[in-house]
Amino acid sequence: MKNMRILHTSDWHLGKNLEGYSRMDEQEAFLRDFIKIVNEQKVDMVIIAGDVYDSPNPPARAEKMFYDTLKKLSAQGERLTLVIAGNHDNPERLVAAGPLARDHGIIMVGTPKTVVPTGEYGKHQVIASGEGFIEVAVNGENAVILTLPYPSEKRLNEVLYEEMEEEEERLKAYGEKIKFLLENLSGHFREDSINLIVSHLFAAGSEESGSERSIQLGGSFIVDGSSFPEKAQYIALGHIHKPQVVPGTEKRARYSGSPLHYSKKEINFGKKCFVVELHPQQEALIEEVPFKVYKPIEIWKCENIQAALERCEENKDRECWVYLEIHTDRYIREDEIKLMKNLKKDILEIMPLIAEGEREESALNSFADRKFEDIFKEFYAKERGMEPDSELIDLLLAIIQEEEEEEAHEAS
Image 1: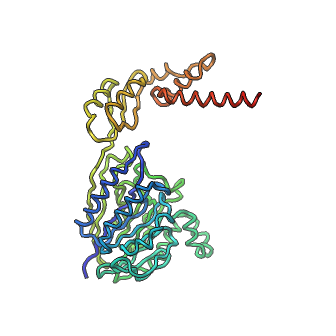
Image 2: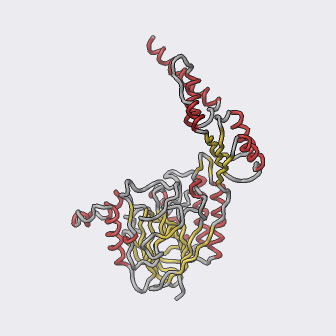
């Protein structure tokens, strides 16, 4: 029997924006390269560990990108693909194409209660299944996979309803419930099969990178590394955007991270996926495959407004997202902001770093005998560090005028 090669990825967040700007051109470029990586690595099975989309109601383009990619990954059913839902995904919507995807060797799992139908999936087979597990036959090798899509408290309780009645005290904590569930499901693991876990959750000791939507409240939705059964040879996780090993799992449990830098807090680490070679009862051989940066996010720190204008001019033809931080002794004028944005497209934010003394001098004065427009300008400048656009002021004044006219009409 030959070894099975799986590729672990997650958190694609198709359809995601950055400060209102679409990232779908970059995502499309990534997906083209991802298909090449899968082919070059001669992967038997691709695992996508949740957060395929950035929202439960993704744009049509994002859905098309995903389904086109799945079709190409499949290679006419030659390769198996396993997809689970994350906390950003709508489980029902994600798996809606499941029956059609089956012909292409694609397995969709929406919730912890999902029971995957047995039978042929492309040129491979699901030979056994139940709530939370599948056994697949891929190219002459069998793998038992525990599947735990994003386990919200409600979904977890639905799966453990009977057990919780029997062990109510012990199973109060979220982490204990996860551990209990995985321990029970690990009974399906065998010595003659490859044994895997795929889930989308937050494991203790993992480093968040800033752009994940938290799925734990006050630490209550955190799972300890000891929650994962020792018989699992590899644990493919999604949710954290920084690629990393979960502490206390002997490098078996890993977050593959997101494929793109989705916030400025992510730019200090590289993006990658893991290619894992597995054989029954043997330690997993894990290789990291780096991803390209298609359009970098950059933070420009400028000594003054003139230096910022010059940097915008020098870099006007470069493809990059920009956060501008400008040291200044005054607020930046609207005409200066427009000039910067005209010179360099894709400026996401202009942040003036004003000396503390200057801030105190420009503190809000008394509201008495002052026009609302002036008060708003001063408030906006204090809070945002720049003057509001004239369009914003006009819109605000129009709304106020409309409300005043309605009040006058009602009074008459």
